[in-house]
Image 1 (cartoon, one colour):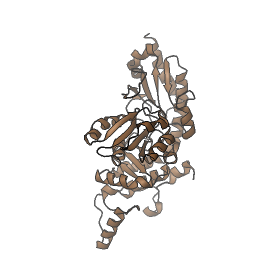
Image 2: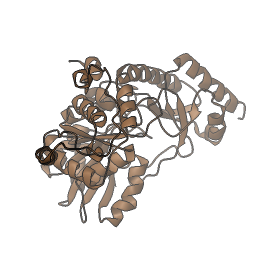
Image 3: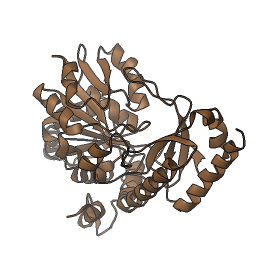
Length: 390
């Protein structure tokens, strides 16, 4: 089946719920066994690689299991787990495979909370994180050590949008026995088939496009069969779980993710090209644009663009960045993305081994479901305001 069909049917089993088209919300902690034979069977199933029956609320309910099944099917992975946030999903995915005295490689463009945790909690646990240029490709081999357990990738970076050559990095990782963990939130399973390109573990902040309505905090991690047991153990040992209500909202959002993503990606690419033509703009950071440094990789490996990109004001206008953002009426100032609404935020990303060239001038946009012409008008009037200040 094609994506548009699979996204409607994945994880849905109306026959199990008296014909209900949507999986009901199961709010439960305790699950009662009818007798000792059933008790023993449930314990055996929980310890196996098969999908276990209902066992205990923290281990999943029919609601969360439906979401997990749908995400694993869309991803092309073996099994998925749900988490209370995208950050908890990222952290668990790394900690499942790296421990004391071991080494993790992460791109310099990595999601901010992962960078922060790398220097705090991971450091306390004896996990060393080394940052690398996200455009390094196969040259990452020079950084791999005997203790390297995880190579973390994120393409494109969610602030500065550098593309990564995932197949090349994965080939190096696998030659050295390392696991490739990818934050695939920007593209979703619909626009990048992570497991087809060598990724072992795919992470999503399902808060974003999966849910799509800015009303849920949720993470999902999908593993291939070889990595499943380690991920499962870490998930259970850390007590990671997610509310059935949030899982229900994610399932509801998932059914329309394809149409939302297509609309938002098309509008974002249109706005990115329009911004590239504006005299106030120094550079647009979007791999969907032909002149972007990562465009060739994006065109080779990705199936489309989502609604998130960034741009930088010209140096003589950078001092008016605050005024520009405050002047916007349809782009709300907010730190998330992936919902139905358009958002804006300033970006000044920290770097360790690379340089961000647009200090105090960077602006990230998330394009929602508004009419693109209205969004252009909003940006144009904000440009008009700061032009009067020069």
